[in-house]
Length: 172
Image (tube, rainbow, N blue to C red; front, side, top):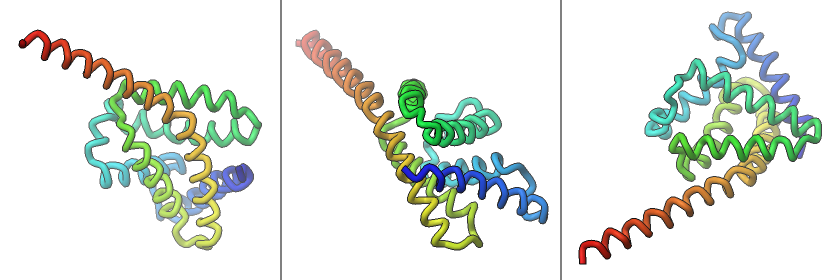
């Protein structure tokens, strides 16, 4: 994975955001700009996901930005196993919140949108390179999380099927 591109994109984003803030083009911090753009897009594309966020954007936003930053740091430091475990735990929590398998694909698209939106006005080849690097990271994240999600759904489908059979048997 091109870790230097990931780190560079975070550093560039922070620098670019600070410039936008200093020029009065934005009214917030780099982190807030990131997660506001991301969640605005997510809720525009998949409005049903808004109901999954009970804590509000003021809590969820920093958690998202922190996870993204932590993922980059762990990958850069070669802590792939630690990141894998953190992602599996995250998937378990997401299962409990009611996140559906299809939401993960939507989130990936929203991440790409966020990166391209936040770097408007920057060399598009550089932005494309950043997006490609983030797609690779997101794919790695999904390789860790999706098996947890699939196991969760398989167990629930088996449970529902068993309950349906019992209910059908009881009505005969």
